Amino acid sequence: MSESVRPESRAERVGRRVGLIVFGLWVIGITLALTTQIIRQTFYPAGSAGSTACRPGVLALIGAVRRARLAADAETGGERAAVTRFRAALAPEWDGRDALATTCRGDAAGERALREVDRLRYAEEHATRYEAVDLARRRRDVASLERSLASR
Image (tube, rainbow, N blue to C red; front, top):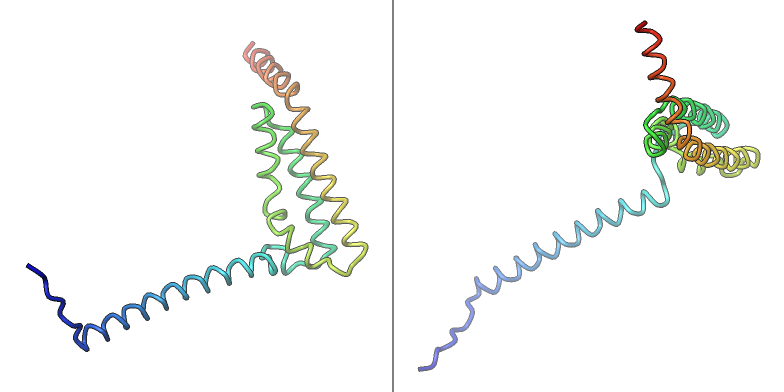
């Protein structure tokens, strides 16, 4: 018993071609959309600093580092909690840091200031990490002592 292969009809050939074209267009569309997003994020970073001038943006970053340091200093949960709190307190200014670098291109003083603020941020984070190990225990002890003194 041999099965006979029946020839494709014209409608089947057209249907197959239409299906391949639709699938091809779908793949091309997804590829173009993802490529466009990658290019935009790589070469044109978005962020809150995108509309900020260079020097006021750098000043905002300095303020954010100071605010983050105060937030981390108030943390009593240990090293990880202090660093997490430090990083969270940097927002929203540091969310636009990459866009600010683009804005500062060509302004030598602004670029230098931005590099110094970057160094300050990482030095403060480093200090937060290592100070938190000892300070967290001391802060908990003092808070406990404060509660016991207040209840008497």
